Image 1 (cartoon, rainbow, N blue to C red):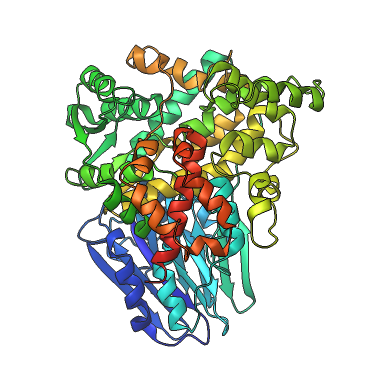
Image 2 (image 1 turned 45 degrees about the vertical axis):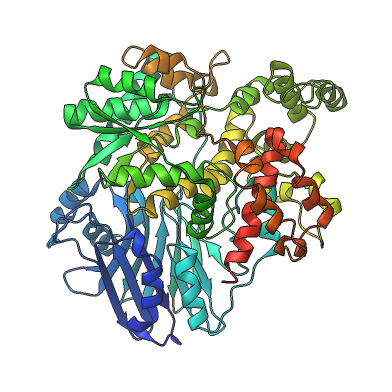
Length: 619
């Protein structure tokens, strides 16, 4: 895990000095060293968190003839296997760094080199001989990469917006907030990629390259998830195949020259990752569990039992959260409005883990790929109910709505599921995934005309897919990419900690998406194949337990520590959010009864974060 930045173009001036403010802005991503290369038309910079080849892996890394160099944020886990191929092709390896494999792969296959990388990465590669700059991002977008173009046609890029902004200002560009991004944020809880909060600034899409040369700039896709249920084996054979691929994915992610561990909760995904890591490492594995003061949310007892069963050392992290201070810290870290309040404990647990290790493995991606959410169960159930007329489904949904029944009660959940049957595919995704304001709620109070968020969501809905696969495909491009992966990357990077996600290994993902939908969600059980594949080795309470989120006492904080802040900011006559929404809406989110309803509490929190972020960019 590192941070990169740079610029490309014939009108580029400033050289290495241009990058210094950007590199200072991302020092937290790489406190162990800095590397820069600059010559006419190109400047590359990086901050390094040394994980592999600690002494010899400085960047940029060059090929033998010094006409290709690369800077990398992330890890290429299959670098040892790639080294063998590089040697077979006559290359001389000068380091033990995974980064060096990239330059030699590019030399041998300039168009297809990214397809051979198995890992998480955002990279910039300079090819002097061809006069070319190549940016690349991993298949799921685990590592971020933002870019923009100046009026003089200079391409600027960086791992974080806080590093891109000084590069923009050095070229006379004032970052301008994009109202549409705020509108979408209030529906989705985060700014959906590839857009960003700033007009004209984009995130490179996952599984894509950006190539800049004398012919211009072009964004090219090199990978996308394929939903092709082609696995012909039995359910038992599928379990064995999944376990083998999970084991391989974890083994590759244990490659490190520095101490590492795993985040271990009471959930299936982190327990599977920890089990496989323990089989490889043994009792020397470190595991970390968060303890909660709320008994209903505390997972430390179950996790401790899992660690004891595996014979590994478990450290319980007691998070000393200061709601006011930590909210301010979150707004400064995340660069854009980000409404998932679990980012607060994520920052804290990353800081606590960093006191013990430099790398942690986590269970991210298991829910998205294997169908771990209640909405996935609902999608599977509704796939066979297309015969129900939409008006009938809509009437039943209103009778069972959370206005009459609690949102999490069986009848409330049934109402929400039926509402999904009564609307379009895009509206269904918003209904099932969003706790924020939906389009219909915002339109009467929004200042100015906006594109409905459902249109953006609709662009990520594949009409050829149905049921579970359609929901998962949208999750990978919306919720996972712009919320869950952003939360983990920014929380760990802010604390100079590398987070690795074995369940998002692309070969494992390709296997998961070849499985029949009823292997992943089976008889109403989410993630059935993962649970059954590990039923004999994991703590039974983990296998049969219900999914728990990384939740915070949001209503308590809104009514207590944040109450005065809410009124001093959102209730102020000069609230910055008033430039976008009518004051009547802000007055409603300040009402105490709003905090008692889970959905309304999230709306209040999302506006508070937005207001604090808008104020922060003025400083």
